[in-house]
Structures are given as C-alpha cells and as structure tokens.
Image 1 (tube, protein in one colour):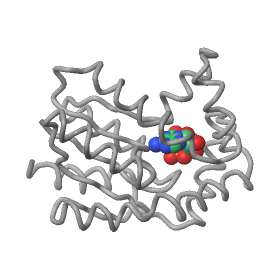
Image 2 (image 1 turned 90 degrees about the vertical axis):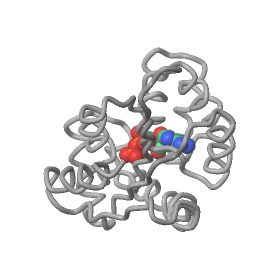
Image 3 (image 1 turned 90 degrees about the horizontal axis):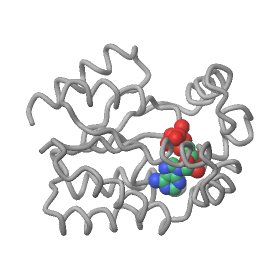
Length: 192
Ligand code: ADP
C-alpha cells in the first residue's frame, strides 16, 4: 500500500498533482474540499454547515472533518492506497489521523509538501475563480484569509511530519511547471 499526503497552501497545486499520482499508482484520491463541495452541491446538512466556514475562508471544524475523512476511507476497504489532498490541516486532525491509521494498520508512506509563495498563490487562485467559478476563489480578501489560516493553523504540520516521518517528508518547489513538478514527484514515489 502507498499512502501519500499532498501538503501545501491553497492554490499550491495539490489537486492537479493528485490526479497524476492516482493514475500512475492506481490510488484513491481523497480531497476533503471536494467532498465538502459535493455535499454543498447536493444540499446536504453537512454541506450547509461546511459552506458557512468555507465561504468565510475558515476551516470546517475538526470533529466534522475527521469523521468525514474516516468514513470516506472506510468506503474503500480494498484500495491500493490513498492520496490525501487538503487533509490534515490542523494538529488535531494530524493526531486523530495518526491514531486512525495506526488502528487500521494503514502505513503513511510519504508527505509531499508543495512550496509556493503568497504572491503566486493569490494570482493562481483568482485565475481559478474565473475558470472554475469556485466562490472562495473569487474574492481577494477571502483568498488572503485562507492563506493566513494556512500559515497559522496548517503550516506547523511541516515540522510535525518532518519530525514524525523523517526521511519520508519531501518539500518541493511548487513554482515550476506542472510537468516538472510531476516528474519530481514520480521520482520520489518510484522508491516506494
Ligand atoms: P484549497 O486548498 O484551494 O483551499 P480545498 O478544496 O482543499 O481548496 O479547501 C477548500 C475549503 O474547504 C477550505 O478553505 C476549508 O474551508 C475547507 N476544508 C477543506 N479541507 C479541510 C480540512 N481538512 N479541515 C477543515 N476545513 C477543510
């Protein structure tokens, strides 16, 4: 089994790279943001609740997110492995995730961290807002808020994983072309 966390700020290219990885290694892509958006589109109770946080650029509460993620994993009992995109985003999520994976004897193989500066993030997200129509990508204040939330609550997980996983934590420059970044990731994953 290969299980990878694709880590990075909003707009760093996690979703794009996740698509390449799942094809190459036949893995399941789990994006908490996508699951929330699906729930919003289907007007579920969870979607209604999540949208209140997402529209403000805040994180959805931990308990809700962790429960959702765990039940999603449980849907794929015979998977080759997973690419987690947008999860974990807080220390509480990372701790709960660790316990959950340990309990299921699912190993965490690698954390790949896409490093992109704020200026580039804002411009990518505004462009995505035009192309995809995603509400939280249309407004510069909400985008900056999301980047701040990342800095305050999420970026600490880089230290967490570089301490916990040691040689399996890979920071990579996410400001290069999509293809070059994919090649880097393929190279890293060829060792697993
Ligand atoms: P991006 O990485 O561009 O912000 P995502 O689709 O990953 O896009 O996330 C969109 C929004 O969904 C986040 O701003 C947040 O409100 C919510 N969200 C996604 N994943 C999580 C998570 N693990 N914990 C809490 N909120 C989350």
